[in-house]
Length: 313
Image (cartoon, rainbow, N blue to C red):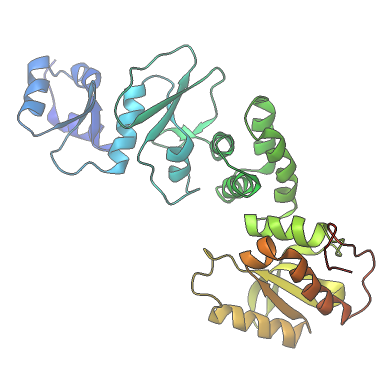
């Protein structure tokens, strides 16, 4: 079979400019031709039997495809690599994680971490990677504490995973670390919690002190445009906006001001704003301020301190 270099280029281009020696041989290349490409410096070796078809800088995409091709049949990118490709994190990891069937073995190779699973996870996309739900559960197993677990659940939902998909994956993996915590927090995500900051508010401010239940993620037309409130106490004419540092790196925005003014003028509702410090570090003090706002409308029943020494009454 005569080697067609345009076909070689097309195959490599479809997988990050990476190709395996096995693929090259199927396309008609012989060992000496392949050796000349790397010996001359025109191509680069990523892993044993995996080649990059140019001499320039190695992109993360090429490294990801290289890891996937090296891992072989039924492999998928997983963990942080899958999270990056699924847009669950902007960070491209230095070490590329791949998951393979439990009965297969892959030789160690630089920049690669191999995981074995008896039951293969759901896969998606190209390069092939674990689904957002499976990716989240993999990373939840590495998470340290409630906020990290909730963050991965929220990122999976933003990446189009449904809560029932996350619940199913957790059921399928009974020994995974942090499973019980993830199942508990998934109830909050199903209710509309979208970030660790909102989770802190839900648990440490509202629920811990017996505050009235707020509506989550309320969307409506105000001032001629769609706006959304993180939390709304409709009966008390009060809204709460939870401004995370990542979402609002420069603090209050022009749009925030416009939204608050529209809520005040058209819905006769005041807006209180809190950030991470207020919910995670001083939740009791935050609750006291919230109660001032709620009680300006009408009495609030069922309030209680969250612990001995809590000033909330």
